[in-house]
Length: 129
Image 1 (cartoon, rainbow, N blue to C red):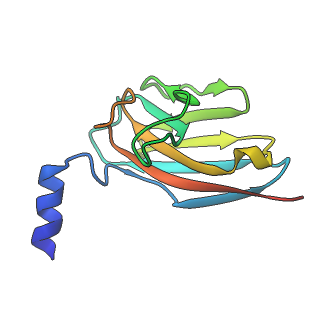
Image 2 (image 1 turned 180 degrees about the vertical axis):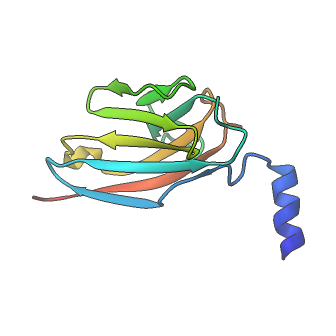
C-alpha cells in the first residue's frame, strides 16, 4: 500500500499539497473561518477560494471568489476575505454574513486556477438561526 501512495505522489505531485477541514458549518447571519494548510515550497504561490464548478473538484464556477497573489496581506471581495500565513503554511478564508445560498462545495487551492493546480474540496453548510 505504501508503494501505491508513493507512486501516486510521483505521478500527481500536487496531490495532498493542500489540506482543508473537509466540512465547515456556520449559522445564517454568522461567519465561518476556513483554514487550508499547504506543503513547504508553496509559500510564494497565489492562493484561492472559489465555489466548485461543473467539473467536480477541478473547476471554479464564475471564476475565483477571492485570491491572494502570494503576499500575506489580506484581500477582501465582498463578504469573503483571505489571508496567508507563510510561516504556518496556511491560509484562512473568512465568509461573513452567511446565507443559505452560501451552502455548497468550495475549493481551497494554490496557483492561478489551472486544472493542474493543487487544491482540496470542502463542503460549507449553513444552519438556520
